[in-house]
Picture 1 (cartoon, rainbow, N blue to C red):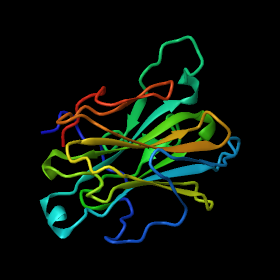
Picture 2: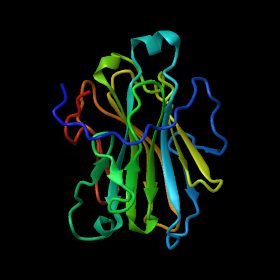
Picture 3: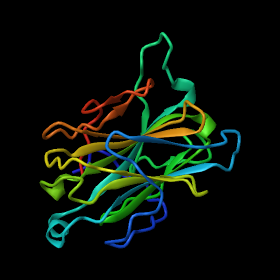
Length: 225
């Protein structure tokens, strides 16, 4: 049973058909990164972060393939890189805390998908963003299975022809959490990095994104679904 009350749902997200081909764009290697150009003074700029997954084989889908998109975030004003103050934890946007595009954090989760397909979050106001971390959580009811086995990947696009595909390479079958892609807004444009960090065996504590860009696995609140 959840310890939280689920908020009213956002409009249903678009779903990707099973077996849909990967989107065109840059494919990151393990540990690789790629920059996209952004005009931080342009109020119409939007970054879209997708968690895509096909559920894997028919047998794997039958056992369960419910994944959740989380976007952990640090506002630009809170970034502590190069400062003397100690790093602090950032926030989290997900299906129980959908966020907003009209006010901070200028990130909006577009709804929960219980079946393989896609979950999406939109990030606006890049001038107000410090870091954003795209993560996935695997519901306990899925049983044992790796995120790679589910066909999970992150896809990040600016909607203007710049798309970065962030795949997973490790077949870790013991983790409920994976941090997939870090978006660094503290430089010109945005730098997208493939980070692929997994939670320890049996841990349901979500990751934490700190104000200096550090990722702390197993350091956040425990999630139940």
